[in-house]
Image 1 (cartoon, rainbow, N blue to C red):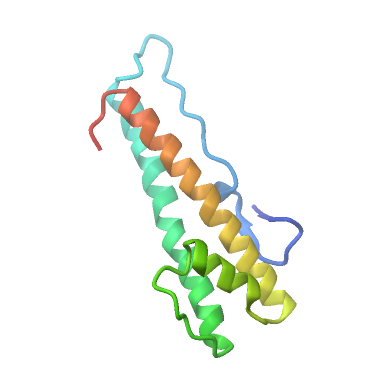
Image 2: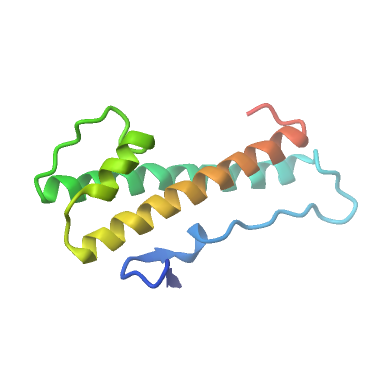
Amino acid sequence: MTETVDGGPQALPSCMLKRVAHEPRPGHRLDHRPYRLAVAADLARQVKHKPMLKHRIHATLMSFGHPCPVSDLFGLAGRELLDRLAIPQLWRETVDASLYMIDYLASEIDAIKRELRATGADH
C-alpha cells in the first residue's frame, strides 16, 4: 500500500508514513529482549530510508544541471538553495516530499533511540 505526501505525485511506502508502536506482551517488561529487538529492527528500517531520499534529491539536481555549492545540502544553507532552484513542478514536488520525509524520519529515529535508551539498550 502506498500513500502520497501532501497530494504530491511521489508515492511513498506507508511504512515510512507511520512508525509501528511497540508494546511489550503482557507479563513482559520493557527491557525484555524481544521487545528491544523489535524496536531496534524498527530503527534499522527507518535509518535505511533516509539516505535513499537524499540520493533522490541529489539525482534530481544532477538531472537538471544544478551544482551543489554547499557542503551540506540538507542543512540551513542547502535548504535555502533547494527552495530557490528552478526545477519543473513535478520534480519540485518530489524534492519537497523527500525533504518532508527526511525531517519526519529524523524525528522518528530520535524517538526510537530514546525508547531504546529507556529500555536499557546501549545502541
